[in-house]
Image (tube, rainbow, N blue to C red):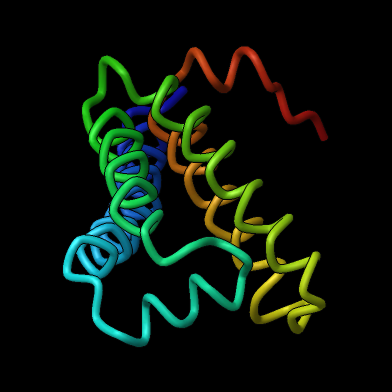
Length: 130
């Protein structure tokens, strides 16, 4: 692989990863701050208001693991599980498909896409062929 291609892939990977990390940091910060809109939205999804801080803690742990390169794969697995739960909650209450239900899918694709572009071990594990 040419060095400029590897650099492009690394930059793309980190850009995708930073977008995911930034969104997740915003999400768990809002859960820790627990403004009324977060409590009510969580209740609409079927979660008791008291679970907001626990969800924030779980998300913070998964995000920190994802942000640290040596544990990024474990973090991506945990984030994928967390997002799967969010997707299931939105499906259960019949939220709009593209804006709510699939938002977790978009984030998971960005998270794994970020790892795919920045880590050759992931590219070897999931080879995309033409």
